[in-house]
Image 1 (spheres, rainbow, N blue to C red):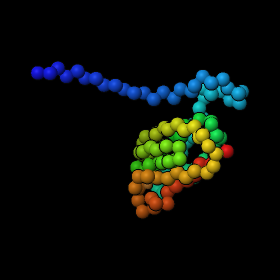
Image 2 (cartoon, protein in one colour):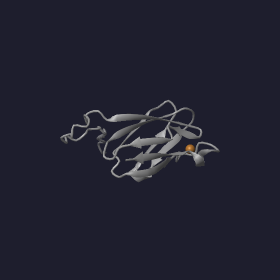
Image 3 (tube, rainbow, N blue to C red):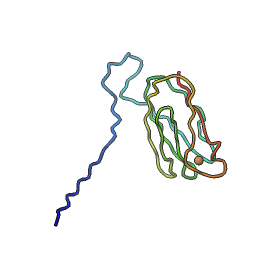
Image 4 (cartoon, rainbow, N blue to C red):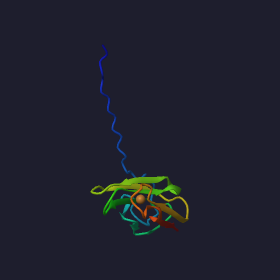
Length: 120
Ligand SMILES: [Cu+2]
């Protein structure tokens, strides 16, 4: 007989900003939270303006059904489930316009459910 040793390793992603000396522009202890609402079949806001190298947290909620949020250029995705808040952090490291979209089939208008992140 073998003794089962339960070894649960809980990995907590602590959103810890590095202790980089700031340039005085803002306090990096406070990461800006951007609420994004998903509904059939759009995101609100559909355009998100970000500053390069400035970390932000997307706080995603659904107004109706299960959606997905996918911003492939920055390796960000999340399930957006009714009644829950999904938080993902992103620090855009390049400027430009990058598409995000719903990647969880949510109905007939799913294919057009998208938006863009504009990084400057
Ligand atoms: Cu969808």
